[in-house]
Image (tube, rainbow, N blue to C red; front, top):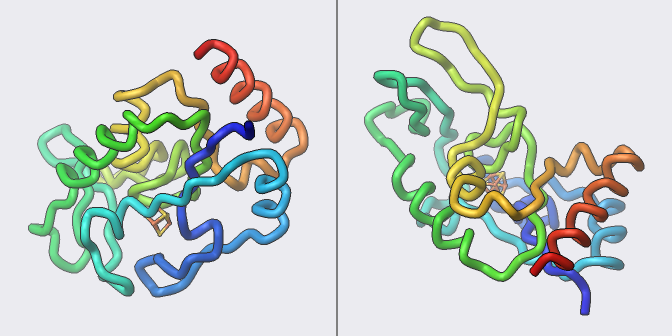
Amino acid sequence: MLPTIAISRCLVGDPVRYDGESKFKPKLIKKLEDIFTLIPICPEVEIGLSVPRPPIHIVERKSVLKVVVIEDSDRDLTEPLQSLAREKAKLQIDGFILKARSPSCGLTSTPHLLENGTVIYGAGIFTDAFHKANPQIPMIEAEMLESPQQFKKFIEEVTAATTNC
Ligand code: SF4
């Protein structure tokens, strides 16, 4: 049986991004489908946001990171995305491949706008909550899989996680 890997849904070609587009990576997806069973997940759609939708970003408020609608900063989506992540962390999956820079799905590359006006880079709100709920699941941004070394390392991590189950 192939390992089961969750993946940001826009990467498999579904037009679920805020702008109604996808971020399809056909060569990568073909390669992944040969070795994994892929389960596409779009956190923003699963919490009920429309396609298209107003873009969101991560801001610091009272020393806590929040994800809000850029044009309507009172619209705070942090709790729904964290709650969904805790639910998804209960799935029987062997790894998670994520869309870089997304305020929901990024792993290390998502901009965080801090209260002092500086920007640092880290995880999206969904990914952060997922990892906290289930730190054993190997996670990687799709762009990193373009490196053969990173691709091999991810497969090894998935295999190790599967073996340890
Ligand atoms: S990056 Fe994540 S939240 Fe954004 S469209 Fe892709 S799957 Fe959905």
